Image (cartoon, rainbow, N blue to C red; front, side, top):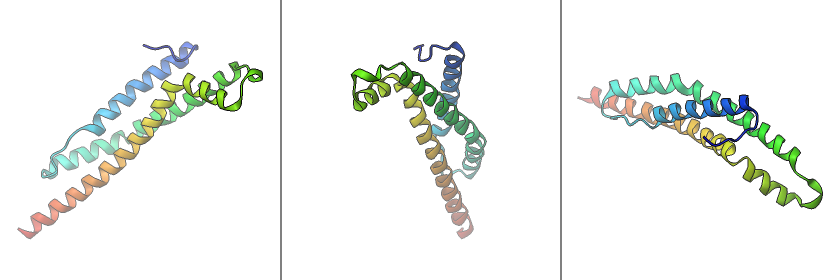
Amino acid sequence: MKQVFTDEALQNVFEQTKKDYEEYRKIVAKQVDCANPVEIVNHMTELASVLALGVTCKAKFQFLTEKLSFQKCMNLNNEDMGATERKIIIAYEIGDCSFYNGICEMLIRECHYKIEMLRSALSYNKQEMQSL
């Protein structure tokens, strides 16, 4: 476990949010047989019910990233380096937290796209059943 925050409470929130993110990722990554309407509906229900977890993780990662950025920014000696150097140092210092913030946002988007894809597959299956 890499220590990202000096404050133990923030570190615990970060670790728990990473666990929640991993749970969310596993559900979104689950493969579904698009020829089976029952499986499609079950997975759509599962995705819809877990969307709140993804949004919560994103909000926590955003808060933690901003908190860490502020802490690191306050610790920099502004007199002997330029703005670009400070920006690079801060980006390096908040790398782990910033990574999870960005990847969580992409996973939320992927979840929405997957729900739309499953809706399309369900609609196609319905159309195929009616034409029989």
